[in-house]
Length: 122
Image (tube, rainbow, N blue to C red; front, side):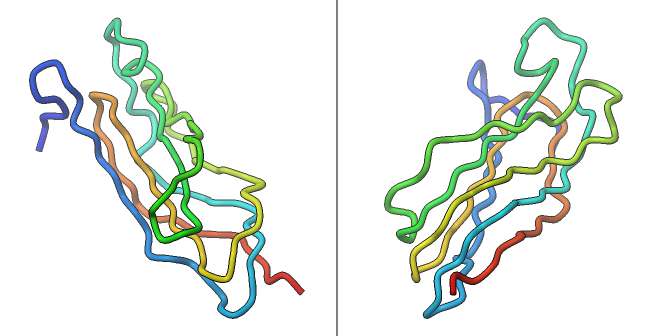
């Protein structure tokens, strides 16, 4: 449980949500809020471990194609008042949207909860 790499390669922790939809209506996603374990940076020389980040992408077609990855800081060592928020996520099709959250830094990591701000398209 304390190992986040295999040799020199990072073990990537990924969480993928079920599709979020309001069928048959489309949704506008205003924000994704993620509560994660904050302030997990380390005192090493690897920049991805000193100031680690979470990668967020989404798919509107069931996971066949994904958006570009957006990076959100997880906080340097001791920065415990951090919350990950991604805003202005656009409009989805009637199929809904699946989110993918990933962390590859060699730090303590964990997702506690997530919430979506969304509204139906009239």
